[in-house]
Image 1: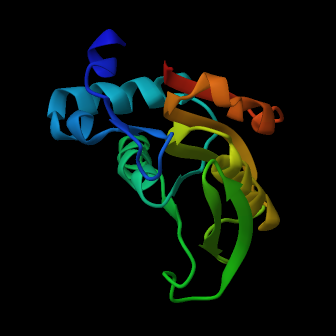
Image 2: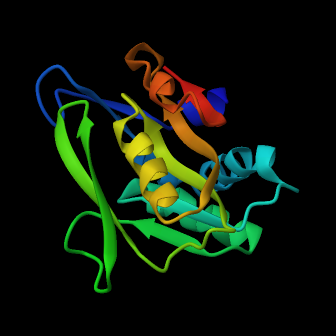
Length: 171
């Protein structure tokens, strides 16, 4: 994991003063590091009864779609408001530095789906918790949540205590 940690760049005071942004750009720029990240993220879920992979806009799309491709499963995009052209279900939530909303097409998942939720970062847990709620509003089950980076001091894991969590890198 040290190899992957070296590919995460700290950007101080972004998007506002006091925040240290964990930039994954160097990681996704390196094909070997990206491949290792995807394989390490999906490894605990091989052989599980997962029927779809969901990822949150925007960086969750990178890892989520690659994991869906590796597993041969559908990818479900969770998007910002106004980006999906069909009927949607939505949920509002709080972020570390503001508030936001996510939407999903109402026909993205079915009640028998078992979804693996993917994002690049677990901070306060607001985005991930809202994503789980959104998937469950449509009747599907969240099998687990997986993150490239977890900011332990922000205790986002507490908001996800009802879910299995797998994080590669801890800060």
